[in-house]
Image (cartoon, rainbow, N blue to C red; front, side):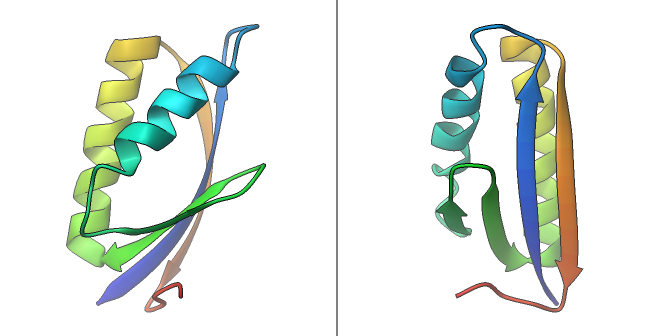
Length: 82
């Protein structure tokens, strides 16, 4: 099964652009994902199990690397973004 996830990151820092860019850059290293970034969110799409594993790894990495942040997500099971 495929899934599409829209994710927005809101770091607890005045200089919020650095952790957001870092998060997006690292997310783009996962070549099995389709990604699309806009001004307010990033959309990732792929195999359900793989996407969930990537999100788990990314949230842990982000917390270790940059500290706390709020993530707003939308999950659409069964959809692969174009």
